[in-house]
Length: 144
Image (cartoon, rainbow, N blue to C red; front, side):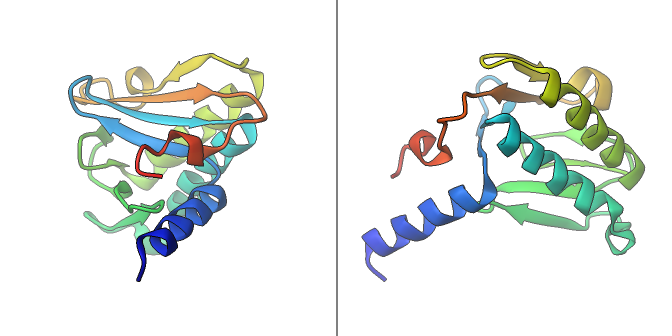
């Protein structure tokens, strides 16, 4: 498959996902960037995962995005690591609920942090950044 075709597939997947994500290991943070609509898609992704009782198995997980390294999973305690965002389904649902409440009331440029409430002992932060309505996740991908 040609590199342009691979890039086009990645562009489509970013647009379908509706937000951009990356992991900064030097800062120990998962960055989720998007419009309010896009960040609510991230919220829905978590709540859909947490609502599925078939996912209530330790180590179960789903990968998302064009490169599939955003991983939401089931674990015995809430955690945000270089590997994933995981926890018991009930706590994942609470995280989705918190995101669903905060995002609509946020303003462009605002950065929302979730480690303190979801998993204060985690080594990584979960940061959501509100972008304006013209934002495209494609523009953030350095490989495109």
